[in-house]
Amino acid sequence: MEALYGEEAVTPADTSRTYYRAYWRLLPLLLICYLVAYLDRVNVGFAKLQMLDALHFDDAIYGLGSGIFFAGYFFFEVPSNLVMRKVGARKWIARIMLTWGVISAAMIFVKTPTMFYIARFLLGAAEAGFAPAIMYLLTLWFPARYRGRAMSIYVMGAPLAFVVGGPISGYILHAFSGNAHLAAWQWLFLIEAVPAVVLAFVVLAFLDDDPARSRWISEEERKDVLAEIRAENAGKIDHSSAGAFLANRKLWQFCAIFFCLIMGLYALGFWMPSLIKRSGVIDPFAIGLYSAIPNIVAAIALYVSNRSADRTGGRRAHFALFMLIGAVGLATSMWLSAGPVVTTVCLSIAAAGVYSCVALFWALPTSLFVGASVAAALAFINSVGNIAGFVSPYLVGMLNVTVGKSEVGMYVISAFLVLGAAMTMRLPKTLDDK
Image 1: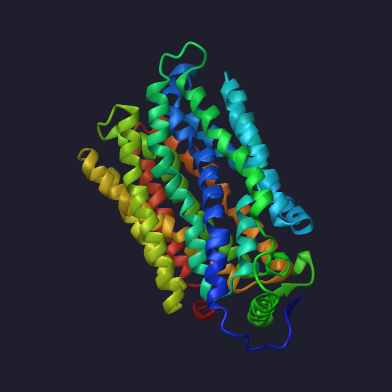
Image 2: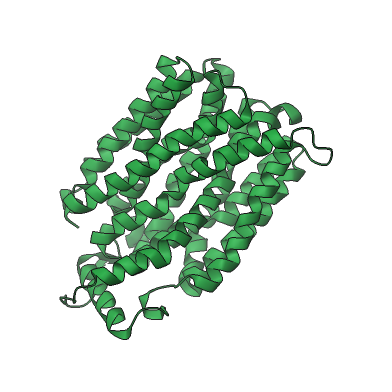
């Protein structure tokens, strides 16, 4: 049974200055945390350039190992978010970052496919709950009119992980090649794990769980912010039981749409270095530089698209449009196949579309659910949808090996993006107005 959440609506004072202060207080740290998280998740794509030959792995092993990360993510996502609700986002995000940093560094010990699979599974289990915890934190701090922009700034960490991490990863592979102690790909995992461990302690020191417990806003500002968020939540859904929650059809629609989005997101994340190499770029550092370009474009596009969606309210149409843009860019990157410049342009279009959709998507379920239901929904949708994080790299890798044509897998991924756009337009129009 569903129930409306909240109290009688009130009209709060002007809180815009407080929200902009919250942007500067929270979002730079959250963006950096997500950047490091995403880098540690997908740096295997750069390690692949040397790791596969060194360990005698093929694309199918790589695809399965890359994707099995999301099996750990799937099984531990909802339990992680339930614990987060009890201990608070600050402590739980710090715990997540510390454990994933340690496990990411342990990738240097991988010798066999089984060890590769286990390490990736454990990394997914360690990171489970990270993204939903941050998104839940944003629902406590920002009403809908500010939340899309806040999510877009946070999600910028994903493309910026490639802008910063691409050249750095390429440089590490180049500079540490021939090192007597560890292979260059091992140095890559070790060096890029350190920031996660350091940031765990920064989060503990500086992050605030919610306005009620913040240490930097006045009592009057705290009351106004809490009043506005409480008033907005008055018309949202909170579920009385797990059965009522799972019976909500819109929940499963969100899961299916997010699944299609993640198919495209990780096709880009795990295969972009290989696609650039396929276009004729050989040097790892040059591949890193080329891979930064699509992600710079994506960072700009996701901010502009989400600000436009906040201003106009047309979230469904924005999301569907950028899903189609992502599909076109990904498909043409394979179809044209005319050298590094054309490939980079096509990948830039794909990245702009797909990354914009990550922030655009989360404004939809957070406009419908509230309370325990929004925390559960964020974790559940992220958990179920991220099964695509397993399917996408494994499917592309398997098709590369069995069909012998690398473009087939990307065409299939593009079709998933088109399907996700179509399903989005079948969501209720009322979500545009929230």
